[in-house]
Length: 284
Ligand code: ADP
Image 1 (cartoon, rainbow, N blue to C red):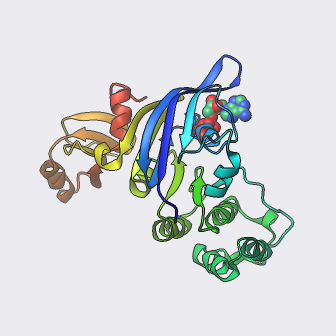
Image 2: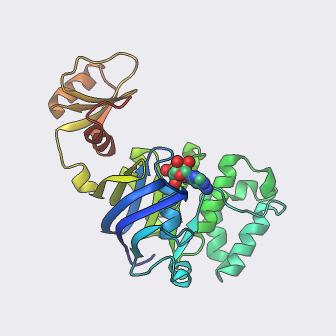
């Protein structure tokens, strides 16, 4: 549910260690429903999310989210958002099934909560102790706790890191179908390109791009091209991401190469092209 998300940040700075800023003058105005924050490891995604949720106080600058100042109005933040960070504190001695029941009683909707647990695939290990779960199962459990309260906007930090394909499908489909609004972070471009309508790209504590996914993919002649171990006969390669090349070319050329088995596939480029532009095409 939720009513959309409006972020207004002006020249926000943050440091854990004096004189070593990790958020460096971030200014963004984003209005959307599904916000994705993407960046490499250490680019500041978790820190930015912590600031947005009022867990950390910015050293300087102004932060407003849905008209709320997260540091001074934490009660409002807690009422509006339901954050789940990777380092979740789960009750390790409890069985998964018991935890699901407690969450259901706490949010006043035991049936809906139990249905959500089924939908996410938690019932398969309901008799297991939380402390005995694999990292993927544990991640699924903390995602469940962020999605169990439909009156608040879920805020998920790297929700897909440990998930297998099946769990990824379940979580993304619950997000899509049950929630109008959410915020998530990921280091994988596709996660945000597919699941968000508005994207913030972070690099080393700075915003290198923000806006709507549609604008991100507005350059219709730049593609992410999926290759195997042979480099295809292509001109206009702008960036090299291992098995994915960022290429400026015509869709027809790529279709021909794909039909001829020279490439595996292609899609409009988005976040990768932002990296290419920010780094002058030299990514390694
Ligand atoms: P991301 O979520 O994009 O991986 P983080 O926000 O976790 O990035 O980290 C941004 C930077 O801040 C990194 O350089 C990281 O080492 C540093 N950092 C994160 N947490 C702490 C902390 N508690 N103390 C000191 N430095 C930290």
